[in-house]
Image (cartoon, rainbow, N blue to C red; front, side, top):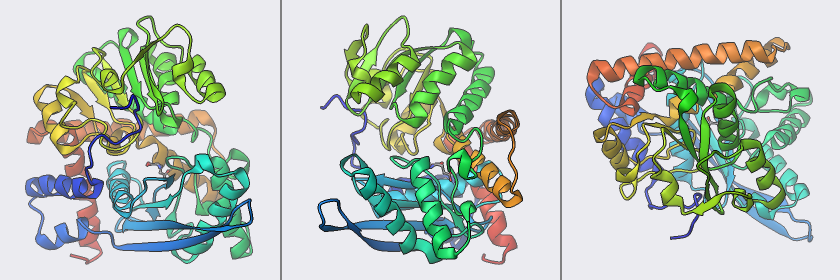
Length: 423
Ligand code: GLU
């Protein structure tokens, strides 16, 4: 088994997982077959072929997708992922999770997701720019500030959002930066968007620790994945709680240090050498050992299916805070619940990103800018409210936190579908 936290250890289809999760909650909510049929299928999806001129003069054709899963509660919202292992079913699953995420946070939005099968690490900046613009040209009719608003996801970033906003504006014949969120601040991005996913996760962890009686200033943390979410989570665990990050990993391997890893040093090491594994004063461990460490908080912040039937029984953390989308399989969920592990489910734990994206949309519509403090306060309120409603549903129905989050979110989506006369 490679010492690598980016590899999917089980060949689970994420969209099958979504459908299993819907079934479990549909029974609790006593949903009708029509309601279930709508919840189990995207309302719309677009498949595109993108011809891109490469630096060597040849043309390469990339496959891309945009799935609008459900827009009963408002315009589609969700990131665009650039990844070599992207599949249409992954995009469908991610779009479904976006639908539950916006509903759970009570944002007036639906759920969508985009993806392009490519390896950005093998593309030059010029090729990446041409690919980003080609994607926007292909989906132009399908997206828009009041229709469907993309954002960053795995391997896409503010610079890519800026190129996409520009391409959309050029075609529209006027600046239309509100078509996308996660932009650089000078192009209408929101203060606080950069670390919003991790910060929202911190507010959720704070609420969970309150419920479970954990003193976060003495807590130990292991982080799986050291991209945007993982790095900021490490930094904020230390900054906001004084917690000790004892382990971290990236696609090249995992490291451990009992006294604590300095989050900034780990980030600097990753930037200069491509991996946290090259840090001084740390022990190298294998990926599965990181998941089974005796820590208070485990933060999966990489890809889908990381915690699965093979390793869930080994998890010793008291809280699993899912900053990644879909890191725990349904079998693993049952094992964790039976073992008393408190899981903060992905579409609650990582909802900070889309929540600040929504704030970015509001600011763009008003042509106004809030300061960071205001963004943090509003984000804290949204995440705290969402956590409380999930915890309440979990206690009321005696179900795990993911099922409880589904119950709250599906109820809201179904209510909107009913009011609109769809079912
Ligand atoms: N890609 C992020 C997510 O999965 C953010 C989506 C957004 O901001 O629209 O939640």
